[in-house]
Amino acid sequence: MVSFVLVMIYVAFIGLGLPDPLLGAAWPVMHNDLQVPLSYMGILSMVITMGTVISSLFTGALARRMGTGLLTAISVAMTAVGLLGFGVSRSFLALCMWAIPYGLGAGAVDAALNHYVAVHYAARHMSWLHCFWGVGTVASPYIMGAVLTDGAGWQKGYLTVAVVQAIIAGLLFVSIPKWVKPRADEEEKQSGKGFAVKELLRTPVVPLLLMIFFCYCAMEATAGLWASSYLCEYKGVNEQQAASYAALFYMGITLGRLLGGFITDKAGDRRLIVAGMSIFSAAIVMMAADRSGYGMTLAGLFLTGLGCAPIYPSMLHMTPAFVGKEKSLYLVGIQMASAYLGINFMPTLFGVLHDHVWNGLFPFYLLIFAVLMIVAFRMLCRRARKEESA
Image 1: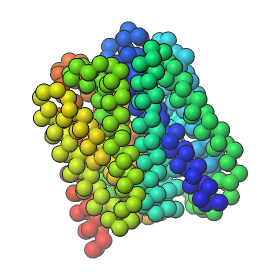
Image 2 (image 1 turned 60 degrees about the vertical axis):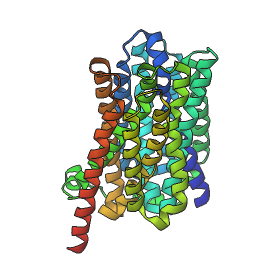
Image 3 (image 1 turned 180 degrees about the vertical axis):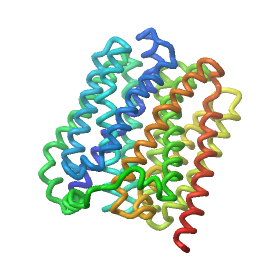
């Protein structure tokens, strides 16, 4: 029974990953078709992300009342509806409208399933879970790239992914009776009245945790959304190739999380995080130093993804250890909200800087968040050691 539920969680995370890189991969074509500035991708991303922030904040209460299975199925179905809407839209305003269910669905899936796995499964499953997210993120840019190469239009790319998402939602709805029965869901429903946000924020380690999630997701979202445009606008790569090359970042994340699942139980979350931060810092510097061609940039995108791979799953898996299992359901939702704020505003800010300052800013912008993340993680480890020794 538990193994079946775990399989469905993996499938759900493929569905969670599928939509994430689509906008960045297709936007060099989309903004021309829609006759809007390149920076408008940030506005659309902001609408999606605000939906995820809202749903993440309510995930704790919804998971207790509905159960993780039903909440996940409904959320994936909402995302499928949003993707379908993108596939039939012909205006920027219509895209903004369909972005609302698109974002609301994604946030609840992310927070609910991350908490479920963090509490009830070993660290390797958290790494592999996010590897399956990476499978979705690698597949969809290639789908979009193939569609654009065939001249079918970006709408067909969204419709194709919407069909896959609808199939995943259908499987999840069929599996709901098996999700309701597991003891873990019953424990979550009876775990108490919950915790106020102010109470959690007063916990000393929590602001640092939120800072790390904000910076990590700001960096990941900027890399995923703007890599294609950076390759087009600054490196001179054609639009179809750039859409496919953008997948290198997600390929690095996927491979890193696949390999991480085999070693994380032995190496430990903290060591993997330190190793990942070292790799992506070096990779971003390599992209910044690439002044001729784009070979080093492509390698840097892949290595940046490889370095990013352990950060998100390992930090989530460590959350119950920092604040306790009872509070972690609510804290994971707040962490997701902080993460999505980074996803929301920082790529949008980059879009403005890209248009009005310099279109070669991409690696330097990523480096800012890399440095902030490293500093916050060092402070978090020191704070945690002091609390353990107290």
